[in-house]
Image (cartoon, rainbow, N blue to C red; front, side, top):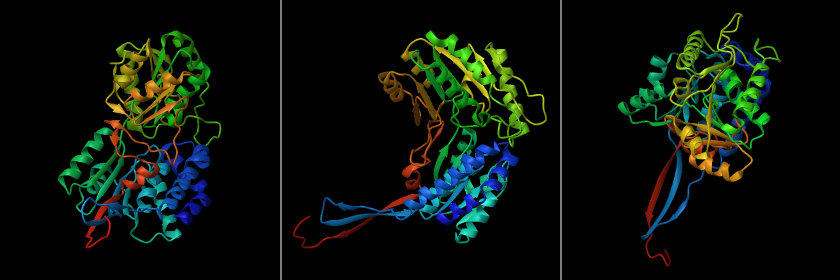
Length: 414
């Protein structure tokens, strides 16, 4: 695993270029951050591989008992197109450390880097048959993994709709273990005492990073009424400065959407927002250039029951909502079928603690956003799925606990 990570570092430019060509990701971000972070995730779990231990138990009767941690077996990984490199190693790293073999199906929109990673795995000495990459479409290759009788577990990141199909296939086949990291409609809640400039920075980053194609994007910003107008102005000012362009240009912050179908879906949601009566503050149109570019788009005066405030758009479209009290903020924040993440911007730690314990989401960021790490578990509540990525929780989901019990005769103590 460590040698594999070293090989990734040696080929960082080629790998970053593949993800840029495939999915419109920013080349400089992939080269400087995503691909190196992927290699470091591999190193993190390599360090855990020889620290998987069971326990010795004090049984209640005349028995000696212990537990063994055993790999679940063959794992099917189905990964999304918005982060091809990072998601590949989010799935592969803990499962290989746990001792599993695996079949990885990359998204059909972004298949290239996964093949390169498999090639480097072979060069690193990973035995044949341990990491297998299978290309194909979801309804064929993905469905085959989810329903295969010899696959013991499936780990999926993607839409809630497809996650439901994977659960159904797992239930119909061999009741394989399932972990799902699904959609989100994450709120960023900004209170009156917040640093408005910093809060606006978090809001712009939280929705426009990776052109909005992020499962935990802060696609709803809830702003307390005392600073609403000032925050709105600052938000628009910062969003206007967000640089759109060629993803190979180091100055670019915003590349093209991944594909035509998704591009058209985002534009249809923007039209929904206009028809529902939200105020279009910024953007709302395709960029007049070659490629599937959409302007950073901000709607204000959004009501919590509007489609743009309920559905995961998965693009550069932000809904800004107003609230009066902490109770109302919590109510609006929880008014979603999703529960992946949330952000809280406040100088009052009592407020931060109350909100972080009241929002039903798997990750709460206080005075920060997108603070992810190898050692911080990440996963959802409600229809954002179940099962954790990152941290030791991700390792344990690929391990079975086996209890071993033997009688003790004539023991002087129990």
